[in-house]
Image 1: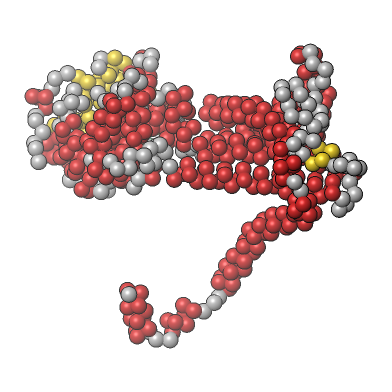
Image 2 (image 1 turned 180 degrees about the vertical axis):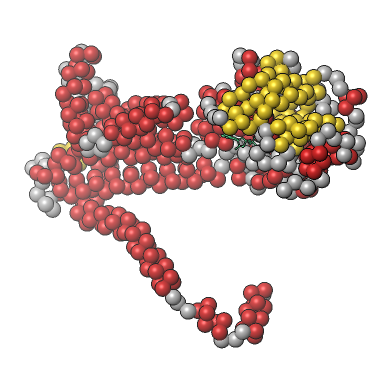
Length: 262
Length: 316
Ligand SMILES: Nc1ncnc2c1ncn2[C@@H]1O[C@H](COP(=O)(O)OP(=O)(O)OP(=O)(O)O)[C@@H](O)[C@H]1O
Ligand SMILES: [Mg+2]
């Protein structure tokens, strides 16, 4: 395994600055007063047990919270220095952020159309361009070899693991600055997971990645820095190696990564 | 091979007893069988009814079909079935009447119902949606004679006045009436088809930055196309089969329409209007049943092709 470069050498520009983020569903809070910074071209891991607020955190970044009138968000999230809640064109914001959900969503379109959807939404691509994009994204998502002879088949009829890779290809086809993966490997076999992890390591040179995972070892393998969320609280943020070597601020972090959590 | 091995093991290990336990038919088994038979009878009864109906109309009409002049029937427009000396049985004009009215009705109903379904399923929320759904279902329940009455007493004078034509009972009138009649049920089915598209598809597209309209056009409509096609074909079937409203609003005159303002006569309306005044077993009577057979076959073909298209779409 490649050791991730230490955060100091990578720290270039702040891609995402979160200040005092609090998320509530009705009166129940899902996330309380979280502040953190994510740097450009790093893989930022988020670990934590169920219900710790990881998914809610991702939803506020690309403004998926607007679909849930019950969800209240306070604090600021600066994306490239601009408050995401003040972006007038939320569609433009979302098109710069690729999202991979825990459960695969192969749209009921052909495999080709699944991947070509985002470029088509943006417009201005010739069909030759689209062919190139589709092949590149499917290759990166480790799916091209399996589907290259049946790009016309329905994406929703692929196997679960294939659909998840299709979802990743679709997210990549947006050519995003920021890729958010929410427990992407739930429906993917270990071999494919490793192939996708290799892809993510390559992508680190081009984009910023937020990796929410319930596999602490996955965070260890991939993330430059990692945050530990616990019941809506951000318990710890630090260089991933520190979290795993015991150099932590909070003993709960050590318990969690060592699997001592009940 | 492998099941054999396990059976051998079983019977060699626990002979007799095991076989008894597995073979005994208890109450659950009988209930299950009884339900299976019952459901089978219900299912098969639909087929029996269809065959029964078809047999009946064939029995009444086949004598005519056997001796009729196919070319005359399908290519001439002269329908004088009860002429003493020289009856004529050309149904071309009747086919043209049914087809023109149904065609116009679909031109009216498809945009209406598709738009309505998109609004109800994708845009309306809460109360608005509930109210709209109830209204649409109410509209679908209006008896066709009421629609015919609207055609006669409201559309007729309106068309005469607006377009300055001598008669208002024509293709335009019947097409609009039939379109409005078919639209509610088409809306309802199309809305079901849109609602059946899972929200995760919409969310996935939303997360990619698609606008609401882009999601509808690029994701929801393609995903729902089978159901939408079903809605349209149901409307077409309704158009072919509708009798009362068409009888009242077309003007009921045998005519190949040259414009929307020509009166026409539909196949169904011809049967309804004439069957009562023919002698059972007469040539005229048999000719009407032959038209019934023709209508039956058309509806059958529409449904069958709908089925095939939908299946083709599915296999993509
Ligand atoms: N749509 C919602 N409506 C109401 N409450 C919600 C909603 N989504 C999440 N919550 C609540 O917010 C809290 C955090 O949920 P969230 O999905 O962010 O956790 P998570 O860390 O992603 O968990 P998991 O690891 O199981 O995916 C939970 O207590 C959950 O019940
Ligand atoms: Mg989650």
